[in-house]
Amino acid sequence: MRPDEEIINRWRTSAPFWEKHRDVIRGMFAPITQALIEDAAIGTQYSVLDVATGPGEPALSVAAVVGPNGKVFGVDAIQGMVTAARSEAHRLGLKNAKFDVAFADDLPFAADTFDAVISRFGVMFFPSPVDGVREMLRVLKPGRRLALAVWHFAEKNPFHFALSRVMDRYVDSPPLDPEAPDAFRFAPRGKLMGVFSEAGAVARSERLLQFKIDAPVSVEDFWNLRREMSEKLNEKFETLSDEHKQKVKLEMLSSLTEYSTGNAMSFPAEVLIVSGAKSSPA
Image (tube, rainbow, N blue to C red; front, side, top):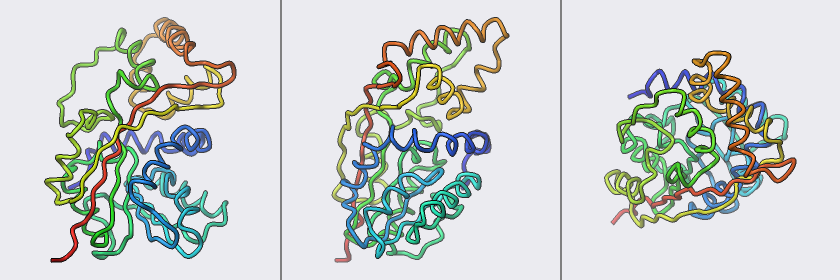
């Protein structure tokens, strides 16, 4: 089973911009990376898999945690993301981080390979989340933990809604099927826990992570960053007339102002961290 081609194309288009904004994005999502490290119980000398790693995060951050005697493997469905991750690992001189193209439901690793498996904002876009989680459990060692991060509700995350609520006034956005691939597919508490249960994970846990998304950029720079990060948002913007584009941009900049601290942005944010373990042999 392969992801929807439309989803793949969107990520393929946005991949260069995730590389362009690498440092800002790493900082914005650092609290989520730390939460995944904690809930997957990652330690030194661990072998860790990061699924849907994008341009290498959180895998590259985890590489420092496992140390030179540990190993981190990052996989992503988009070649451009993998190329960017490899380039950054080379730039940093990391010998313990490797990246390859692979799909979540068909991982190129033997069973019982990893001490921990993590994924940040990946499972929402899997064609079959149950198959993806089941495959991640397959490559996990018995008794070890898997931890995934997903967005809580949009209205709790102005990082998203500050712009989307403006766009929705100009571009018709019909409600999505609850099971459609989308950033907020697993926003309801307990929904991803159900996937973990069906996939066979034990010792399941869910917690709400409340934190700040901080970015050292101006309001206008943040607007440009979000457009480039989200091909979906950019597609909607490009459907507008020139007159409406200018109007929408001004309204969006205004909506972002309340989250500006001068030359930086700070947004309250909520993410669910869902984890579970692979059962040990009887």
